Length: 445
Image 1 (cartoon, rainbow, N blue to C red):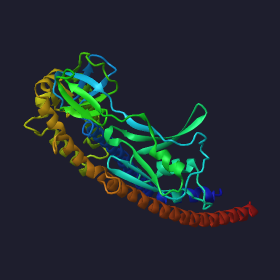
Image 2 (tube, one colour):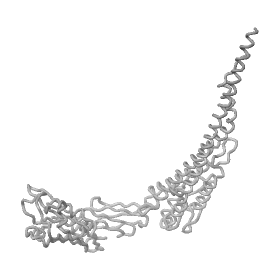
Image 3 (cartoon, rainbow, N blue to C red):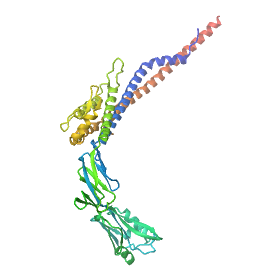
């Protein structure tokens, strides 16, 4: 009578006891994990689509792109948004805006270690805003002393600074104490005085300043110099002087020169490029949803999220939005079609025609308050919120299911160990009996 291998027999029988449960738990875990992966891919596609939407719907971006060109570069630049009307304009740059810079009448032997008074105040006024710097605050270590470097730091770092920078500039072996306005224009002229310091040289220095750069406003003419419309601005950027156009001047022309020509026109290529990014992101999202929600067929497996309510909701809401009417227009009317398979395409010539003939309505359709892009963003937000979004909730639920299966698997492992030990004990005892019987039979052999 041959002996048995207790370990092999115990392993086989214990595995047989738990294997059906292991297989079922593994299938469930694989299913939950596949759903989590699919949800992650759809969530990523939805985020990318919303990013494309927001790129077209921000405060400094629009669907319709216009371009601005200037007959001669170097004097001003122009930026045209969707509201700009196509046309040609004459612009003459008379003067650029400059900031106020002044040098104080400090002693010739001034340097960063020169001591300054620690009593009294240094007062600034710029464009109606004031700063009264208490000089006693310059003595940070309590030794009764403060330096010119301490004064510079105190001015520049004061939270109530009205828009002035202090610097120490070395030139021809001499250090100068300079003040500069942070903004251009006459309104930003620096007014400064010192009082109550007990130091005549210090107060005289701020009473006897010399302009390094005189503040002035920018001046342009829409039309010829002297006969057109004169415009002045403290900044070098003129916003909305021409509807939808910002002008930034950089260099003055010589008096008597002819004005420069500014041409505003539609930038159809830039507009189409942005629309195509929107279309590509939409198609990627919808194809990703279809991939994971398909019911399957002869040559296709069933999607792991087939009939999933979250994904069906996204698909249904988004389809309704892109097929809706905004400003009495539909996407199909401007050349953006959706075929039977749900793929979005662009008829470039039809879209260009809509842009040329009805750009304002087209822009309002996409970017108007509560219209297409706003509606898409509002639809996507509940799904994508980081803490309470529907994707987060779904994935949390699936992760909890996987955790419960892990707990069941741990219980099953304990059951296996108990069965293995029981079988091992039984087969070890049986093997011992068989060995004894073989020995007994051998005595009579």
